[in-house]
Image 1 (tube, rainbow, N blue to C red):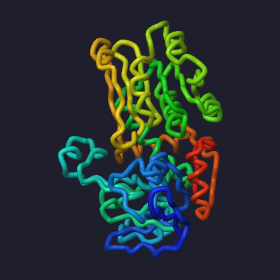
Image 2 (image 1 turned 60 degrees about the horizontal axis):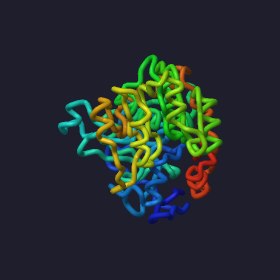
Image 3 (image 1 turned 45 degrees about the vertical axis):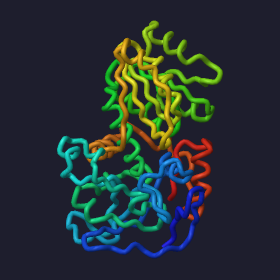
Image 4 (image 1 turned 30 degrees about the vertical axis):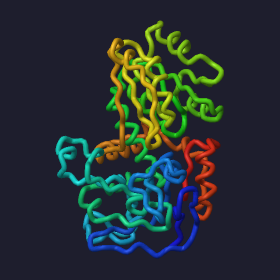
Length: 343
């Protein structure tokens, strides 16, 4: 089959590789659409290293059709499915406590297991038996179904930080994830959403997708904008949606007393940031992180997309064929797109 192979840091090559070898119970999918995630870029550039193999095939946001069911009678050849790509063990202390996204025995598709930047992808029996493969709702496109994964991650982040009705929310960064935060915060009932983003294209996209105010932090005063919009109090929630460590401390200045801060974005290994611990202490701030997703969040994301109440098609601004994988990754990295799909 053809695939985009990660050969080493900074090197992905479109080439012919062996077809996936199926063990008993494994499922084989023909990939119909895969979208590029910021994590794919971090892996490519060597900024994410845990669990990374060379060579390997990236791509963990995807949907496709069943070729081989692996003997799982709930599926049939030709069926349209999408996959929650983190396989938890279901038995460790974190799984038992309901935090399967923090499973100590997690296996992730897209690097630990070859992912979907390929014509075909193998879904291990473990993932099917755990309930990680979902039938696509009728009428949903493969590209949109691929976005259930990042939406699920955003859902996890907003559940952790408690975005709710009437909140004033500040989102730092308007890449694909930042815009998903805008859309989900609006759906959750946020009364005012302010987005800080230096890229003009992405500022316009954030405004079109539901933000009330967008600004360029290099030109405009974000703190003053937030204070003016909240009667001088500060935002209820600030979400760091881009992996710039210095923004963590900036976020603390944007929220009111007892405000909440989400360090949502993935940060490069060993990168540190100065944190104003006095602001956390005296202002009684809550600061939380967010990692990955659960199967329940994936299911809810699919249902939410299928309901039509949260429309994601407008995020898909660029489409490439698999043979153009290198260009697709470059466009995603350079900020000339919102969400890039490989179809």
